[in-house]
Image (tube, rainbow, N blue to C red; front, side, top):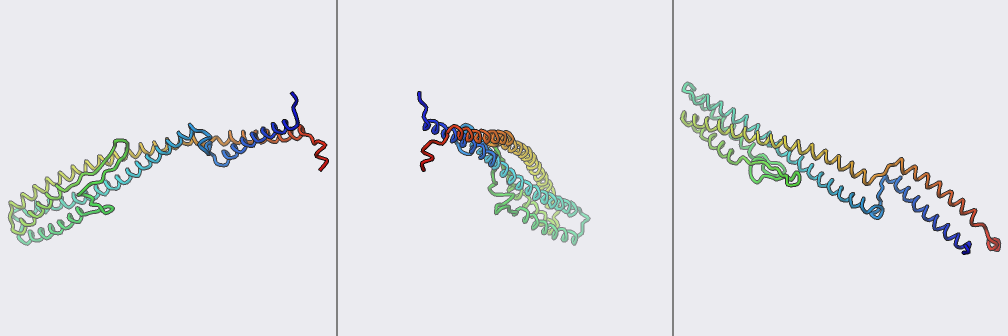
Length: 269
């Protein structure tokens, strides 16, 4: 079979274009640090990359939800701690006011302080976060994972009881009705127990959020590690291959120049 100069030239150009293509791919990898620049480069790797990026976005959303939930519950704890302080003070005042040796003017002073404490409690119960009531009304629900949600419990029932007993205490102090003062003191004491129980439940949820946040943080690191293994290249390996491919390219050009010698037609121009 006769091999013509045209055949040699075509084979040479075909091989050169192939080397240039591989050289271009390696240059893209070296400059971008990515092993996948187009889906056709690695269909399986591209599918894996898309799946991992989706999981990473979902995990990021869980972390944001956890942060919002922790902020809400931390502010709830602060508010309920304030309620605890106010109720403890009201209970102490009630114990002082219900003794038979407490003079009339002292009861009037205690009643005035109870009135101030009522206003303070009202302000705490009306606390809002992002335009929503913190302690009552419809509580937000945060999704923290697959089939994992968390929410706060409202304290409407506690608020109603506190308001009732504080009113009774103020009225009893005003009228010097020891029985009303005593009943109010016992009721406030029970409300204190309920507030402390609510705080304990809220604290348990905060601890759970810390655990979930730690787990989501670990998952974030793992997703990033696996994604890097799928998408990123070993720069050292790519540079070595690139240098080898450049040498092969230069060698192919040199060999082609020697094989394709000028013909008589080249001198007729």
